[in-house]
Image (cartoon, rainbow, N blue to C red; front, top):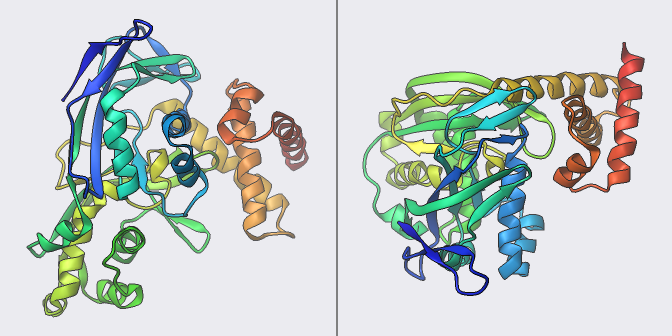
Length: 374
């Protein structure tokens, strides 16, 4: 665990840590205990703020790594959770309770990121600042063991993989969301990260063909949810638990069986599905007895409104169609829905990393388009 000590420069407290791991480590998961000292409000899409705060921490000490994480490969070498704790709806905001503990999970999937995390935890800031909420960092601990991809592969035994999904999880399929843990989609999600970050790549088509033929769903307990996700748009996803097994025929292919078990162990590190750097797809080992926390009412309403507006704007752009039309529709829908909740254009522009004047123009265009559709 970490401990609070007195800083030496300006009298500010800092959080130092005795956490450490081998320089060979490629994967690690951390959990932070965060405590607001007063009741505080959060906007429904606060995960964007956590994402921005984390990248700014990287930027302050390693600008090149920050640029890579922000603009680099499509497979992101880290995940971030939302806050795990008692969050309620208060009007158009989320409410954090003073002196309650909220947990925040961060994972690294690549040696360069893990090395940065090792240095970062030695001198953490006193608090996470999220617009109107200040969360004091009380402790930091290892949540997922420090390991390597080779070690994961070499230590797996068994015939089943059991996972729990503690936040909304979804996949993209043919331009739509797939809110089901279908084996091919689940293990494709993990294999992409494995092949990208490990030095032990496997043939994707061959393995996924094996999964399609031989991986079974032994049992599941799932619930669908709709959430606002990432910087724009909404996602229809699922939470719950599932157990995957193998047919006798699949068990005869030892190497793929080993990879199947290994990817199950990788899942909590890399998350499942998409938008895992914005809190989606949080995955845990085993069949959790505790249900995933319900989506706060205001967050659910925002997600539904974004989905409704997106559908309206896409319908108006049917002639153009394509990914570009969907992207514009989701951007307009996100801006308008957040404005309807009373958020300022400046705050929205900051979250979306767009020029203020562009967001202002999109807000006007989206209102006009909505009136035309009525």
